[in-house]
Length: 484
Ligand code: HEM
Image (cartoon, rainbow, N blue to C red; front, top):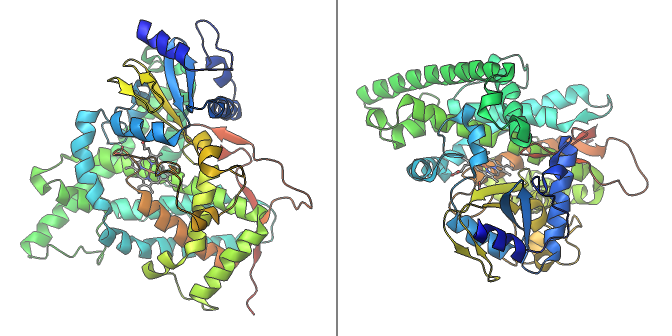
C-alpha cells in the first residue's frame, strides 16, 4: 500500500478526493453526471505536463492517462482488464473482450484472422443490403419532424452484425419484436448500469435482485439460440466436406464469423460449442451499439456542419455521379473525405470514451513515474483526443481536414478503436460498415439539425454508460436530396 500512496502523491490533482470515497462522489447521479465526471477529471489531467492524474475510487487508485505516449506504453504492457469488468461477463462468459490474459491470448489468435480482408470484402454486400432497407425506412418518416438517428442505426447494425456473424436474418429494421433483440436490448444496458453503480457491485446483493434472475434467463435464451445455429452450421460443414465442397458456403461466397470460428479453431477438434458462443457474443456485443453510436454522432455532427456535409456530398457525387447504383467494396477507399469526417467525429466523440486496465507489474512511464501493481489504469480517450500538445490549439474544433493535411503527431494520438495488442479487432469492419451506411444515407438525404438555429449550437449533453451517447438520443431531421 505504501507504494500505492507514494504513486498517488506523485500525481498532481486539483479535484478534491475525500477520505474513504476518493473521487467516487463525482460519479454519483445519472449518466450525464458520470460523463461530466470523466470530463472534469480528464480536463484536469490535461493540465499536467505528464498527462497523468490520480483518480481514487474509495482507496483504489486508478492512474488516469491523457498522454498518447504513456497510453501506448501501458496498452502494450498491461493486458489484463480491470477486475470491475468481470461483472460484464454475465453475457459473454470467457469471450475474448473481458477474459483474463491466459484465456484471451489464444482466443485472439483465432479471432483476428476471421476479420481478414477477403471476409470483410464479402460483408460489404450485407452492409449495402441493410443500408438500402435503412434508406427505405427513413423515407417513410422524412418530413415528419425530428427523429432519433440512433434508433435507425442500431437496427441497421443489429441486422448487419447478426447476418455477418451468425448468418441469421434478424429483421430488426422491420420489427424489434424478435426475442433475441429484446433480450439483447434489455440485458446489455442492465450490465452497463451495474458497472456504473458501485452499490450494485457486490455479488451478494446483486445475485439476490430480480434483475439478476431475469438476466440469467435472458442469457440462457441468447446462448441457446446461438447453440442451435452452431449445431446447424457444424452439420452443414460436415455435409459440404462429404461432398468435397469445403470452400463454398451455401450463402455464396460469404463466410460468416460463426463458420470462420468453427473452421479456424480446428473444426470438430477446435472450440467447443460454448467457446464459440462466447466469441460470437463478443462480436455481437462489441460490434453492435459501438458502430450505431459512431454513425449517430457523425450524422448529428454533420447536421450541425452543413458546409462539411456539402463537401461529403460533393465527394459522393464524384464517386457515384447521379446514378442510383449501390455502393461496392471498391468505392469505400475512394471516400477519403468521408473517412476523415468519421475519424474527426470519433476523435471528438469516441463511442468508448475510456479503457480500463489492471497494473500487474511495475511500469516505468516516459515521465519517470512508475505505475505499481495493485492499481488500475484508466485511459481517458475523450480527453486524450483533445490533448492540445498533439492536436494543436484548435483541438476542440471539428475540422476533418486535420486527418487529410498532416500525419498523426503520435500513433496513439487517435485511439477510438484503442491501441496495442488488445485493440478493437473489428476496426476495419466498423469503418467499412459506417462508410457504407453513411454514404447510402447521405446520397439520399440532407441531414438537418432537430431545431434550426442561426447562431452556434449549444454543446452536446453527453452521457456515459460504458459508452458515450447523446442525452437527446441523436435527434436530427431529414430532407430528401432532389436530383438535378
Ligand atoms: C465505431 C465502432 C467501434 C468502436 C469505437 C470500437 C472500440 C473498441 C474498443 C475501445 C475496444 C476495447 C479495446 C481495449 O480494451 O483496449 C474494442 C474491443 C473490441 N472490439 Fe471494437 N469498436 C467498434 C466496433 C467493433 C465492431 C463492428 C466489431 C466486430 C464486428 C468489434 C469487435 C471488437 C472486439 C472483438 C474487441 C475485443 C478485442 C480483444 O479484447 O482482443 N468492434 N472495440
